[in-house]
Length: 288
Length: 234
Image 1 (cartoon, chains in turn orange, yellow):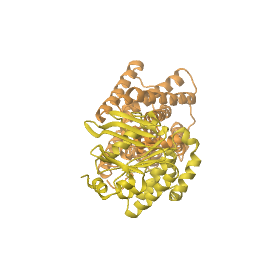
Image 2 (cartoon, rainbow over the protein chains, first blue to last red; image 1 turned 135 degrees about the vertical axis):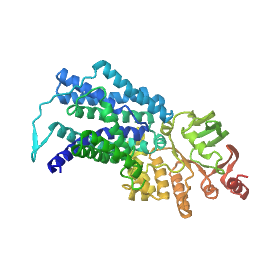
Image 3 (spheres, helix red, strand yellow; image 1 turned 90 degrees about the vertical axis):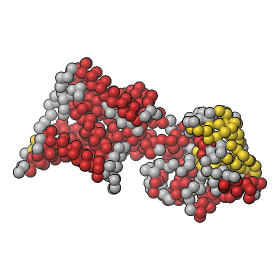
Image 4 (cartoon, each protein chain N blue to C red; image 1 turned 180 degrees about the vertical axis):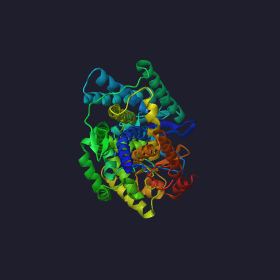
């Protein structure tokens, strides 16, 4: 029998992990919902931003929050760049070409990072106080990352529901042609969406680098789970992705403590495959 | 106000409009009627810029707009209420109307436009917080028209406003369109409900397999022969 305290600790860790996963999934899902293209290389953009924070903070000695803001700005610039250089020319191509193009970007970024920075694992070391809750050690870095993720997602929610351009972004995701008839240049809406999605990758990068070491294949570790969450939540469905993030992170964390971390991912994939059959339209849809 | 000269348009290898010429003067209401597949929807799409003409000229206020993108043409003063209404189902009624006033010039007069639309369609004011997708077909059509009015157009293109509506609602909707007209908007409407639309407009064109076959004053065209042609396409 497993000590219930371990299970509680796993559940808390799952919750904390879920926050950052949700951030990744929402960024990817926002872009997909509006532009209808899956950025396969999304988490690899996060990886590039993580390196940026690492160099700024660990090598050049910038304060972490300045490094974090720089990462957000870099993410937005990368998002715009990806849209202009890669997505825009193939917007009307067959979906498989779009997947190949963003998939190609993934391999480019991985090789580029390996070439520039080798395969060494690099992390930002912060001196944070230790926290204990009922004898359970809680990582302050994770707690901060979780709190900031929730805040950023709240900000995204307000942006999409309360601002003019945010509402226009939702409108385009529902009917892009009708929105063109309202006077919105779809290209411009796509650019704003790509910048926001990229900025979210930058936020995620700053929150991940204080918990995990970065290496060129970081995207391979977090990419698949991010896609699984998006599909599980229903591609383009923001609320679904948010819920699915916590379902997946709890599955990983709890089965991780019962069996092993590897087994946690195996079970997560099993849950994913089962859910695809049971709820192919996403976790929140009533019938498949 | 609007003039098409020898416009040909289509999709891919398919040509939906052949050499179409028509005219809408300021303050007029004009109908284009014809059977299914005659090219009526294509005609409106080529005017509002959703597709580019292959050849021919389209002028609005004497300036060429043929081939300009849709998001630019709405700024010139043409609002298109598309086939099937195309409201944003997951947005609230109020947000749908807000999107209608997307352009800066329209946004500046948002409050005034909104009051006008709510005065025309009081049911939209009652339902402003509701999801647009939960409205009835008739209410969705009112929302689509209201959303178009929010862009402060001078010419409104209506594509099959009566489509899918119950007969009672069709009559109510035509009454409402009549009121929109009385507000001073110029209207170009495409319809299959020929009898009703001819009571609404000043002039009409008959479109058949992509070509204008007949045109004239609404009263003169209201004879049985014309109506039969438009319905069955014979």
